[in-house]
Structures are given as C-alpha cells and as structure tokens.
Amino acid sequence: MKPLTGGVSNASFVVQDETGRYVARVGEDYPFHHVSRDRELAVTRAANAIGLSPPVVYDEPGIMVVAFLKAQTYSETDVR
Image (cartoon, rainbow, N blue to C red; front, side, top):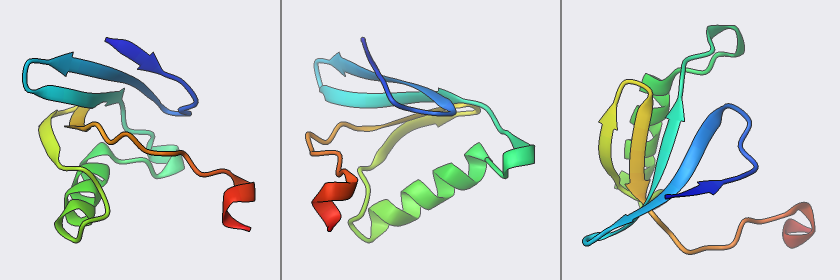
C-alpha cells in the first residue's frame, strides 16, 4: 500500500493484489462543504458508465476502491 498525496479531504492509497492495482479512498462526509460520499459514489459510477472514470470495485461507508489508471494529472499549463 502506497499513499497518494495531494488530496484535500480524503486519504488515498494505491493498493495491489494478485488481480491488479487499485486506488482506495477513505473519507467522510463534510455537510458544511456539501461533500457526500454517497453522491460521490453515484457520480463515479455514472461517470464510469459513459467512459469517464474507472470502475468502482468495492465500496462501503467512507471507503471507495476503484481500478487504478496510469495517467497524467493535468496542470494549468496543460490545458492552455
């Protein structure tokens, strides 16, 4: 398990087993900031259904695991 840095409201980790690599996100709801993990899960599944997000492979309250995508994180200069 290797931590991913840069997140604001989650602890995220790259995890690997015999079936592949995944990102595990651990977080809680922050109602004051309109952060709802149930909504995040629903949006992630909807995004996956149209090809914009990796599939959710596991979830429980406060935890979401998605398939790992080896990709670039875009910066401001990448989109100008």
